[in-house]
Length: 140
Image (cartoon, one colour):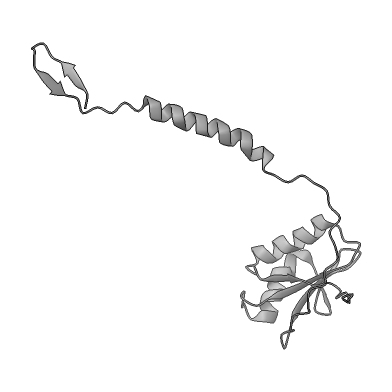
C-alpha cells in the first residue's frame, strides 16, 4: 500500500493503481509478436507427393461438380454457368447444404480457378467439399 502525506502528519492510504509498468510490458510483448509473426509463416516451395490414401466409400447418389480444361462447369453430366451453379445445386439437393459435393478438375486447371469454384460452393452454403483425384497403386 502506498502512503501519501496530507497537509497534516497523518498517513492515508492511496487507492490508485499505477498502470504504467503494465502498459510498458504490454507494448514490449506487442513488439515481440509483431517481429515474430512474419517469421512463423512458411514460405518454402515444395513438390507435393501423390496421394496413396485408401479410397473412401461413395455415397449412393454422389453430387459431382467438374471443371473441364476450358473452365466450363459441369454438374453431373450437364453444363452449368457459374452464375447459376448455386441454384442448380440447390435444385438437385433440395436445398440440403449438408450434402457432400465432390469437386473434380482437369489437370490443366489453374489453382486459382479451382479455388474460385470452391468459393462459389461455399457462398452457396456447401462447406463439405471433397476433392477427387486418381487413386495411385501402393508399392510394397
